[in-house]
Image 1 (cartoon, rainbow, N blue to C red):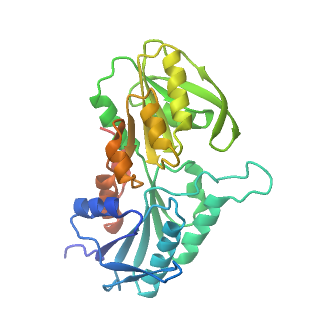
Image 2: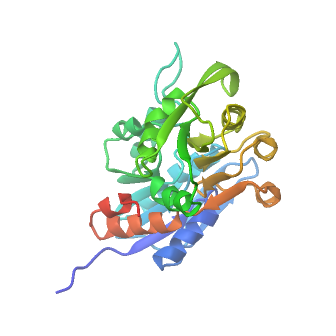
Image 3: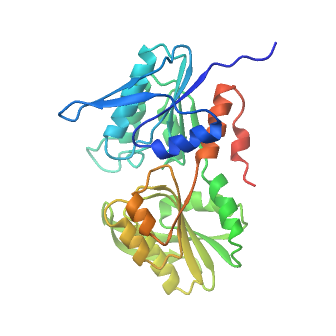
Length: 318
């Protein structure tokens, strides 16, 4: 008798509809029918227009700003639980609040831990995400975490550029491990840009550790918010004699004047994924932003979770 698996139902949160549609297309199953109603004061109420009883429900929603994205995910989880879904997986391509992963000064919240508690309390059985700001955030959950690696998407693209003198760079000390891990795929050297911040999103000074003369430098980061750090690091790298500089960044938050900062920077290109929906108008006008899709990777991971098979193959870079 062939193995029987639970019916898969894929649902999109309103903040991640574009990626969710691509995931559903790659998976080979249409998105489930769901409505998000709003009261006149802005309060949201999502509800499912089809049965989820006994199904493996996958709710696809990044928790970037506004906070309604997170709250919609929590409400959709609760609704699925109360509708007798068999297994609920939160597919959170970009896990917001991940930068608040520890007490770095007195009297601050550990936001990432609080979000983990909220999601678990809402009723999710598993979370699937990509390139957490700190890998240790997996330990904030007492449920299974599928932590996908963006390298499987970026490495083939960087290889296709055939850069003759490739050097990998980290825009700060905190990302040095990420850069070293990425550099192993190319057997490349690693340089580090050391920055000092006055306050959040504002850099005081920066210096380079390593030699970039004549090199094609690729900056590696997980989150690009204002693009200030990357653009300043790129300028410093070019001033020190690099041949070219481009940036690879998983989560394109791109707040404030980030699009303008990228366009006015010395970066050849900014390579990002679609974990966060870009501003359609600004993205269309940008000549430097290159978007690679994570849809196939998430679709394969969803299939593996439903069929109780290993996801180890999804970490093998070609």
